[in-house]
Amino acid sequence: MAHLLIVEARFYDHLNDMLLAGARAAIEAAGHSHETVTVPGALEVPGAIALASDTDRYDAFVALGVVIRGETYHFEIVSNESARGIMALTMDGLAIGNGILTTENEAQAIVRADPAQLDKGGGAALAALAMLDLRRQFA
Image (tube, rainbow, N blue to C red; front, side, top):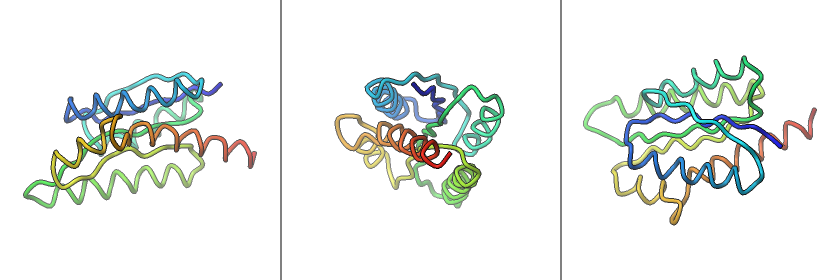
């Protein structure tokens, strides 16, 4: 049994609730346990995963959040840098499923976050578990 940490950037409560529901359901259906920690925004997700990875309490990580395009360049910075930070940690050997949504509008985010639709939270949890299996295969 694996123990996962879900790191959520809680900026849009209603969207994050859906992502969390999907991630938790996928982890539990696979027979694993989880904890959740909340950070202010998507830029803080990689840092929180890095800090948690130093504790050796978690086997894998699920990154969740929603970034919706606004009127400024901030969307690109947050989207690109959060993804870059997560990818860097993955390249360092951490098993991470990236469920940070980057969408043009709220309607797109709802479709992706809703467990009854695209279930990207559940998909991120399954990706983390798949990467954990792969890491164990190569150990």
